[in-house]
Length: 130
Image 1: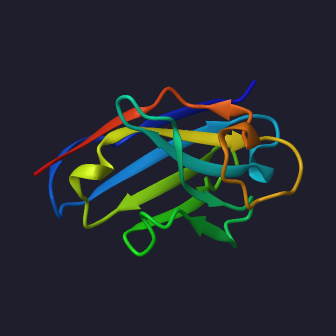
Image 2 (image 1 turned 90 degrees about the vertical axis):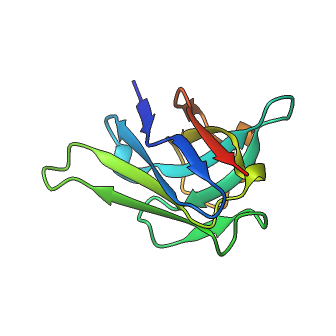
C-alpha cells in the first residue's frame, strides 16, 4: 500500500517562500513518477509540477515556472522517498490545498492530469496573504 504524507504548508505573505515535503513509502517507491497538484476553493484540482522516477526530468505548469522547483531524494537506507516543492515569490493566487501524487506503475513521467496518478496524499494548505 502506498502512503503519501505532505507537510510544510502554512500562511505566508506575498513574495515569501515555502517548502512542501511529501514522504512516500511502498514496495517499489524508487520507481514512482511524482507530482504536485493544487486545488483552490471552488476550482478544479490543477497540475503544478511533475518529476521523473530518478529525478532527472521535471515539468511545470506555466503559472509556476521560474518560481517553483520540484525535487526528490531517497533516504540512505533506501526506506523512503521524499519529494519537495520549493515555492518562491508566492502570490495570492497560489493559495490552495496542495496535493502530492504518485504514479506507481509504468515509466511515463510527463504526467499533467489527475487521472495520470493513482495515489494521493491528504493535502496541505498554503495561504498567501496580500
